[in-house]
Amino acid sequence: MISRTARSDLQTGEGAKRDAILEANAYCESLGKVMMPDTIKSAPRPVFGGALPGTELVFRCLAEGDPDLRRPVMRSVPDVVIEDNR
Image (spheres, one colour):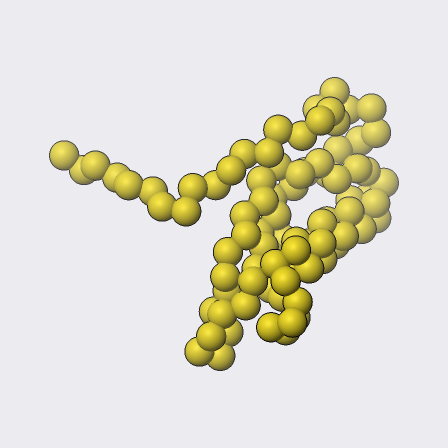
């Protein structure tokens, strides 16, 4: 998992997402593998009393030709989870 926060209030959440994807790709390439995204979640990150756009990317590094390397089925992560403890 990689978590990135925008570098300034001028950078959008897309910039944080791009940075996370680039870093995940570079990590997997350093292992001789291919990055496969699993989930990605964009959410504001608290910074010095304010908030900046942020992204969490969960990914896997897979060998070239792995059958799981297909069009990714990205799962959305709920913003709110309601538990019923009856």
